[in-house]
Image (tube, rainbow, N blue to C red; front, side, top):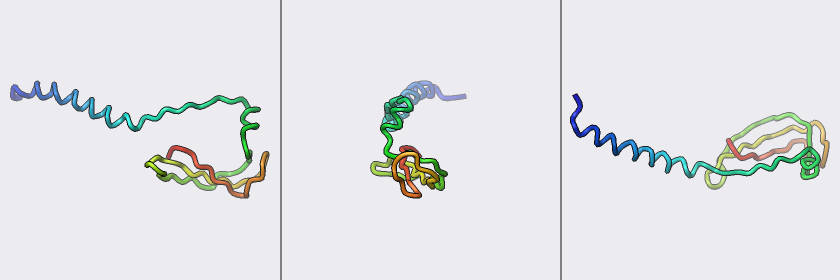
Length: 94
């Protein structure tokens, strides 16, 4: 049904596909470290703390092709700092 040369070709194609897949995936893996802070540390290290409503979410590509999300928040109440009525937070990830 299949010619005899099919098995040797399959034997070479699978490893080549595996290597290709790894090479494509390696640049997309980023390592990050997140510090777990208690509430006192979070408050002390924050410039502004607000209560508000998310008005808009917009994804975009930044320098180097990295994805970001711009989060626009309408501020209802300021708990720390003197924010504008609307603030925009840029977060990594789309």
